[in-house]
Amino acid sequence: MIPGGMERVTAELAWYFSQKEDIDLHLIIYGKGRTIFYDLPEKLKVHKPSWEFDNNKRLRSTIKSFVFLRKKVNEIAPDSVLSMGERWNNFVLLALLGVRTNVYISDRCQPNKRLSLPHEILRKILYPLASAIIAQTEIAKKIYNDRGYNSNIKVIGNPIRSIPCEKTNSERENIVLSVGRLIETKHHDRLIKIFKQTDTEDWKLVIVGGDAQKQKGMKYLRDLISDYDMGDKVILTGNVSDVEKYYCRSKIFAFTSSSEGFPNVIGEAMSAGLPVITYDCVAGPSEMVEDGVNGYLIEQFNDEEFEKKLQYLMTNNDLRKK
Image (tube, rainbow, N blue to C red; front, top):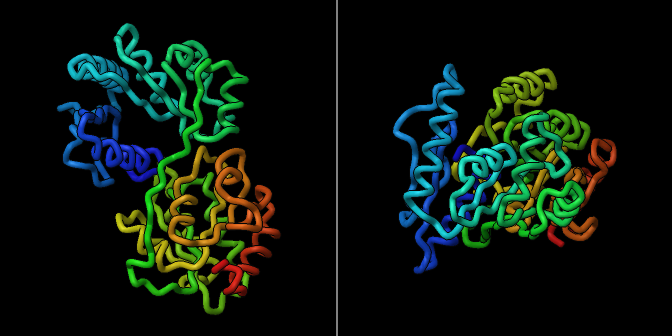
């Protein structure tokens, strides 16, 4: 339950199902990272191993996790199991072979992304055994159909929480906001370079998100900001638990990710009343943003066009509000 889109969706689903009186709700956390970042409802029963995952004894820890998951599901005897994450789904389907319960799976990555050969082989073998696959977009459904992953695929977009900024009394500031983990595929460095090209005299770029995947993105971006002498123009907040206040204080949401399944942050930005400018990556943004209506879809890595449209939004107050 570290900060991330998949974890955010899990928390939102937990809160949604916790409102239903006839549902007994459980969350099993079995991976290496077991810290819970997002608030969860009291009704949710959380199950975690009593032992720590030892990366130095990875095979042994993986087998123990496998046994823990299977045993816990047998104890709970649920009507349905929902697994999310392209690598975790194989693990869950393997662990629950022969267990009589409906197992639903959902990949959360760019749908045409190829995994390592062992994972791809397992996908071909195990995914057809799932009760259904939940795709995040129509594009993902088509790709999964073409690959023969499963005969029962349904499209369900991510749950997006409401962010009623009118109730916060927050004053909008001249802020371009981006939210996302500081990893290479988010291309925050390109966004900083794009922002540098605009007329930034009275605007700031705020990037909300922390390091992930051992990529040391915070240090890299801080060095870049220093090289550009933009320390007073670009703010890196790190991970925050109150991202809503940033949505409600900003005027534009900018997103330069090249690999997405269904970017929650775009939905959250739109919920908070922000116009969105985003790369039109393989899946996700094009099913959320209507180009020229509630934001702009920019051809991936066409940074000249991105800068042009960003500048246009920054200088047109009426257009932003519309």
